Length: 529
Image 1 (cartoon, rainbow, N blue to C red):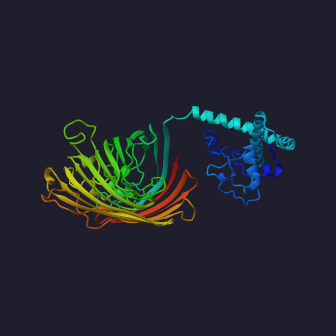
Image 2 (tube, rainbow, N blue to C red; image 1 turned 60 degrees about the vertical axis):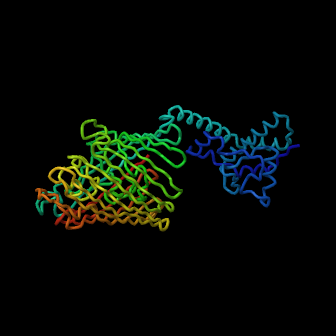
Image 3 (tube, one colour; image 1 turned 135 degrees about the horizontal axis):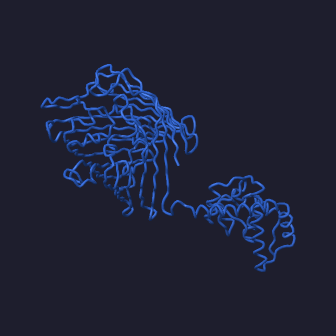
């Protein structure tokens, strides 16, 4: 005769999972969608946290072997010492009632006293059992609704909205061509925003089609300097634009390919090793300290393609090709007959947020191209945007990038980068420029509170230390004599998992030759979903 005693029943109930809390949550929905969330077991030995020395071991074994009305967590634990609510008790009671009913229908013998105890318990908990059924029905209806109203079976929507209040101060503007002591006219406190919506689609579970919409209303180069710009600056006068369209897919176990109709950058393919400064919502607010310029000088909206390959588990290589006017079929444009950028990065990663990389890029800009997009992505002083007054130029870029997670709460990252650029046409043919930049960041994850972040960055933004002018062509673009420096500090406070607020301050020393420092204060609020 199969026998169920009261002690056995109680011992079972103390291990019931909290599926029916007062508030419906994601775990509950996942449970209803996945019947394996709580797994039926056939032997008490399958429970990793139950041993023969436990006081309820025999009771649990009897429940499993005789009545089959015990379940375990997905990790094969029972968790018998945790407290339970009346709803959880009712859930366990309901499970055992169903199991006993099944056994009776199959003709199995169940002790009369066990049935009487169950009847008494069912009467005691009839309200909870009724509510339990209602909750299950409500949850089932919600799941059905979500499935029927899913955005798309293959597409996920991700979004990011950033607001920033900021102002620029200083004794004089750094604008090229302005006279010494010309006051700043665009330093008023402003409110700006950038919104991005990503439609991420996967057809196989391993590939990714990314389509990005963007809108923003930022004012660039306040006080005449790129160094007052933000990591997340975006223009457009509140108009929505298609900002990125790219498709990536694996080739075998170690390789991956990218095809982009609009915008592809090296950091799409290779890790920029800037774990705490690159993120738009939680990282640096100033533009320059966010990540090395070698990742941003191809940040235009042209087409391109890329590839990635894992040489070993720790060593990988990425390749990129992009063209500013690759969609234009006219002479001097197209994929291979206009401005282009080809880049590669070899990365050795020793662990999480720890690695070193060498990156190289080669680019060519036709006549006038550097007036449309800066040589180094608008991250430096004015003589690095268009060194040769609109004339064609070719450039070679070299960068060493590194990150070291010294402790869980302290990280050091940074880079050193050199660019050699040469004029290829016009009156400046044969002129050259040597451009340098570097940065070191000290980051303090979980500073004062888990999830928060504090950081200090010090560096020298891109500047042309030498810039020849063999034909003495009249120009305001000259070599840098006063080396620029930028110092930024920020603190990101996570209000929730999706909302953060961050004050920041940075100072720019020598924003241009013989110009006084500029000061920027900002307060960023970021929403991610």
